[in-house]
Length: 208
Image 1 (tube, rainbow, N blue to C red):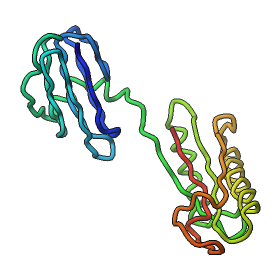
Image 2: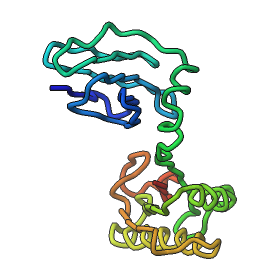
Image 3: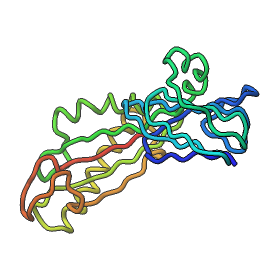
Image 4: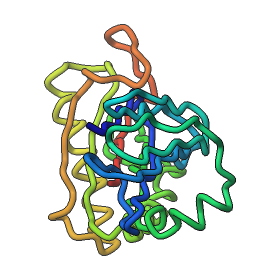
């Protein structure tokens, strides 16, 4: 048995098979090298490499272990240089999908009008979407707690639709955008009812 256990969701790892196949995960393979590499934001998770004979845990950036067979103990861990990691795993790392990208746009009170600084970010967001091979965008509308709950639910929907419309004007296909709206139920900063907190009047965009 050969197994990999990713105990933290931010973990990335590269697994190189001796036959020259490059993959992000492998099971039941021999002569497997596993290297822990940071996420794009620099976070490092944890990987347990397990065979029938034992387990090695990788916790540091560049730390690696090798299992020569499924019935052998994983070798002592060692840290690989960045240059060596790039030389061995470069093609696989280059082909990794971009991580999700998130943006927040803010609105004037009780309107679907974007604040000036948020309107200026629309082109940047459109360009960020264009860098993906596939267009997959979530647009989530929100409202503050001023006014009736039913009213704010509708307002959050209109804000999400407004952002979708602005991106369509820039040239994005509306079929690849999914709209959700939450009214006042999911504030960025929790407040008492009747409080018009500006940061809660927003649309959150996730680009995948």
